[in-house]
Image (cartoon, rainbow, N blue to C red):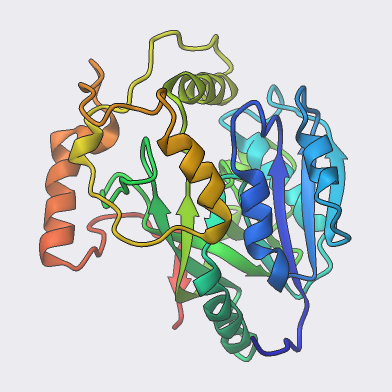
Length: 312
């Protein structure tokens, strides 16, 4: 890897990461070698997330303690607010957003640095797209479905006008600093970023959990989105056997976690029956669109909303 002429800050937000069984340590370690700092907005937690972060003993890790305001920021816009808190404390020229269930492959780190060097010389480039690998139920099945976003913005220039958007899935250029849930949800007060596409991969493991922990996550996400009581129905992954098999290699930092999970008697059964209400990717409309995209369009998404303007 060549030396950079610019500084890179990674940033994220966490809350009860141990309770939700997030691979947040692996997430941090996967990019720590190439960044100058890793800023984490840590909301008030009831588990050992803070202690584990401190046990990493890295001078690059900077923890910002935050409050949690889901009543003021519903529909999961609190995630965007937390993301912005971390971003504000970043000092890098380029910022790498790494959610606590997203891990980078060591083979892609040189690619990441290369695309950053290229984007650095493109004055209008405000962000960089990366490719998403969404694992479902276990580490052997990966979505290639229209129902799941295939790429997203994860690298941005450190511009004060760029803020997290909606539920922190993406970023936009805001005309004024967002201060409310309405601001974070607005399109009229913001515009799409001008971005460069890359083939850097993000391994998204947020849906690889034991069924009881996945239910916990779904329940709490529903509560913070709607403000209503938690949903109570049981969770299952549907027929995981119908989801495509992943044939590549996982990031090396995931080796121990994957081994422990795949040898656990509590991992999901790939022959589980679908829920009474099908998952989105199991519905006929999305299965048909996925078939057309993957068979005839090389994976290109039909009719999907693109929250960016591609310049290269």
